[in-house]
Amino acid sequence: KEYNNGEPERRGEPAAKYQERVASLKDDVNRSEKNVEALRRELGNLK
Image (cartoon, rainbow, N blue to C red; front, side):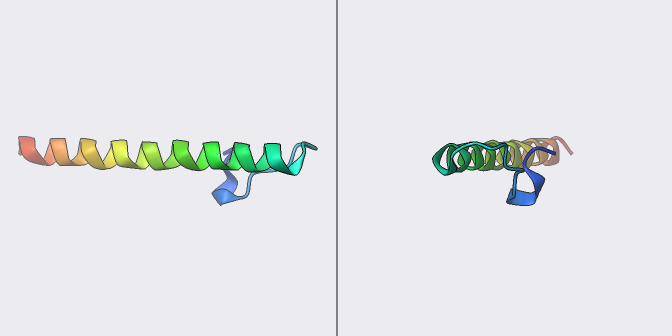
């Protein structure tokens, strides 16, 4: 929800801080997507 499709809500923070937060959220999303892909591969190997 916080990620808001790559456009997180601004919280009155400086632009640099906002960019850091966006980058961190993107990293979190990418990591989660990779984890899901890995789990799907593992489950596929069990069949």
